[in-house]
Amino acid sequence: MWDVDVHSFSKGYIDALVQGPDNTKRFTCFYGNPSAMNQKFSWQLLRRLSCMFDLPWICGGDFNKITSVNEKLGGQDRHSSAILDFQLALSDCELLDLGFSGLLLT
Image 1 (tube, rainbow, N blue to C red):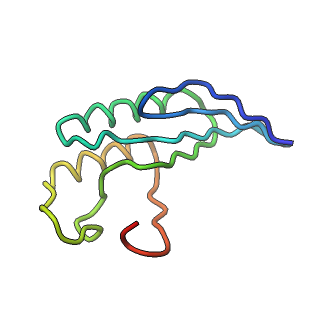
Image 2: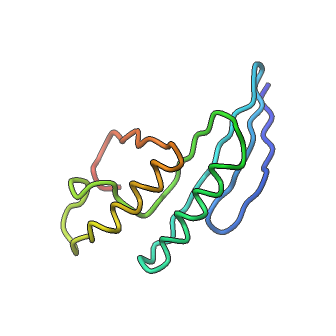
């Protein structure tokens, strides 16, 4: 049996502890601010969340950012500094991009 306890939440995330038969894990659903001007606040939040527990952590959702220009097709170019800020936030939080399968655009 699995037990899920929502620890905290806001407009930008839901953070839960998941108790399984053998151990506790953490799962965070994250939504990055779509406004380029406000994305720095999303990365600050992500960093704060990363320090809250010393447990195995899965963090997924829509970060509204790309980690590489190779992930982008069409539209306006993305500033390399914005991509770097996101990469640094992922690195600071010890998060890895697992990639995806299926259609490039969803």
